[in-house]
Length: 326
Image (cartoon, rainbow, N blue to C red; front, side, top):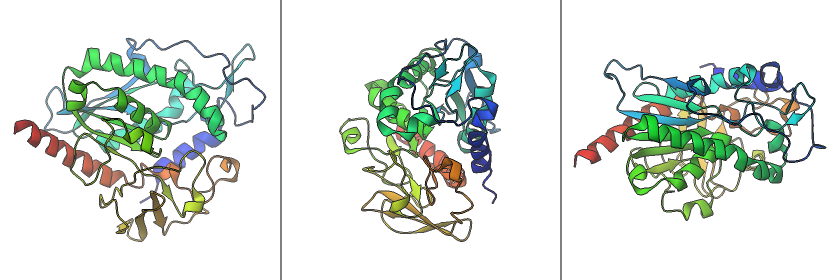
């Protein structure tokens, strides 16, 4: 299987989000520069919306997925020479850089769910070079995600079951959204996929944040981070309190295989997915070395496991519907 998602995303990152915001260091800029106009989520052009493609679905699928995009945009400068550390949701080039992630989400969730994915003023790739800077800037991006989720709940959800899902920065957003669900909303949550971002012990202190333990538990959070070895962990992506193997849905060290020759197992001491059998040279770009060290497989974490994730969405949805009838 060719790992298409990695190839496209890496190309977009290396070219500066489809030609906008080339990857030059901008550490001399203040932490909170100007931000583009705030999104008005009543404008459907600020959403990626995709209807389920299963012939078994009528006008609406059995559930929705609220999908939160990963980081795909570098720092950029506007026509006035102002540098921004946040994506511009009204910039077609920025939206174009995000499209591959929405397509892979469709591949995973699109058979039985309607997908709602908001464009938000995500913090840029430059922001993640320094963990403290990322934490300072993230609340501004998260405020957009919260606003979009509220709009989705009030206008489109209509009391239906739903998944939360996100990758990388989107995974971080998923955990924060999960904490904010009220009792009724949480009762309709099938599962939350917070891929490629650590879930901490502090996060698990929230009553809504429960770690997945098998393939069919519901109302849980699924999280993992993939590396060749613990030494390949990137800054900000270690220290997770949970990890589950998306190939066999075990939290233990029992290995599973993907692509016939790639072995994946959980390192229970570091709570990381250990991936053996990939050519780490192939997936390493020196120009991205400050973000993704050699042997870190962060950019593969949706596509490598896409088939298993797609099957799991169906399995968890079936378990949720069965519980709802009891």
